[in-house]
Image (tube, rainbow, N blue to C red):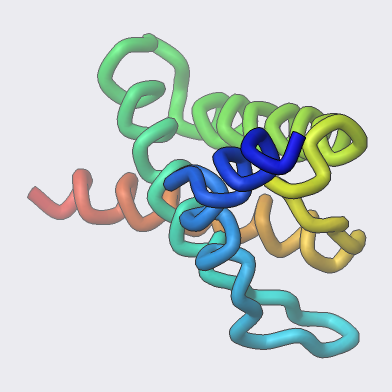
Length: 116
């Protein structure tokens, strides 16, 4: 059992998750951690996929992005109960900011792609 714990605790995935769990801002209404970078990039990537591979109108692309981000947050919340070392407990403020930052990533992609 000790060998198993050693291997699990020293995997790259866990080291990366621990790094990303570093909190930058944590107030009553704002929560930013290094995971926010991942959420921003993911929002941009998801919107890029929606923009290039669907025929949805822009408004519906943002609605789809919002729903995908919410779905991810729900899955992440459920996974916490099974993989406590990978995810930290998220507060409502953290979840809201994760979605907002993902939407911001989508908006930045949309804005940059329309300026060409």
